[in-house]
Length: 335
Image 1 (tube, helix red, strand yellow):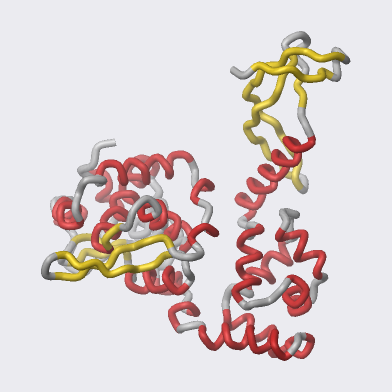
Image 2: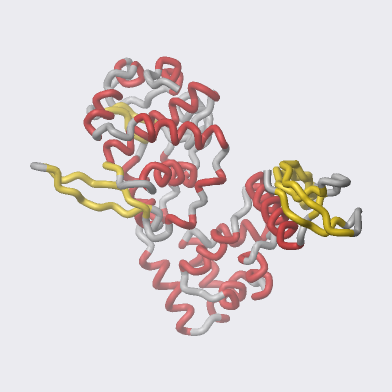
C-alpha cells in the first residue's frame, strides 16, 4: 500500500493518502461500464481523490470496454485501415463522405457511431475500397488515387478471401461452439511466437491444445477454428491459407531455418503485430495460452507432434476428417 500527501477536497487541507482498489461505473451511451480502478483515499476522512489525467485514462478504459462489447473498431485499427491505402486523414474522410475532424477524433479515441464503424470496417476489404474509389475517387488527387489503386491491385487473392466461408457452418462441436474469428486466431498465434520463433508444426499443435483445453474447462474454444486429422497430427482447418493471410496482413513473418537435413518454417511477429492487442483477451483465455506455452516450452516440434498422436482426438478420428471438440474431455494435458 502506497502512502503519499494529497490535498483532500473534503478536509480542505493536505492529508496523508493511501491507495485502494475500487470499482467505478461509467455510463457510456446509455450502457453502464464497470472497471477496476486504484484511487487515492484520504486517511482522515476516506474521501477519494481523482486527478484529471486519471479521469481521462479511466474514461478511455471505459470506452475500450464499450468497443469490445459492441465489437467496434479500436482507434489503432481505424488508423491502420486508413494508412494501408496511403491516405491522410483528410483524403480518407473525403472518400468516406466524412469530415477530417471526425476521422481525427476516432483515431484519437473518441467513440464512433455504428454506421461510421461499419463504413470504415468495409474499407478493410480491397473490393469495397474499389467501389468507393469508383464512386468518389474524383474527389482525390491523382497521386492519392494511384496509391489506393496500387494497394487494391497489389492485394492478392488470399487477402481478399473471406476465410470464414471456408470454415464449417455455424458454431458446433467441430468449431468448439464458437464462430471462427480470424483476429482471435491471430492473437493466439502471436501469443506463442512473440517470445521466440515457433516452428510451424509446433504452432499447429499449440493451437490445438489451447483450443481443446479451453473447451474442456469452459465448453467453448478460444478461436473457433476447426481441426483436421493429418498424418502428422491435428492441424487447424486451412492452416496454410490462414498462415498466408497473416503474413500478407503483416501480422506474422515466416523465416526458414536449416535443421540438419531439412528446412523448417518458423513463425515470427510481423511488422504490424503491434497493432494486435493481446491483453484484451479474457483472463482465463490468457491463462490457458500461457499454460500451454509453459508446458511445451522445452518440447521440440517432433515431441509435441508425437504427443498429439497419443490423444484420443487424433486416434479415434478418421484420416483427414474434422476432429470433434467433444474429445477435449480426454485431453492428456494437466491443468
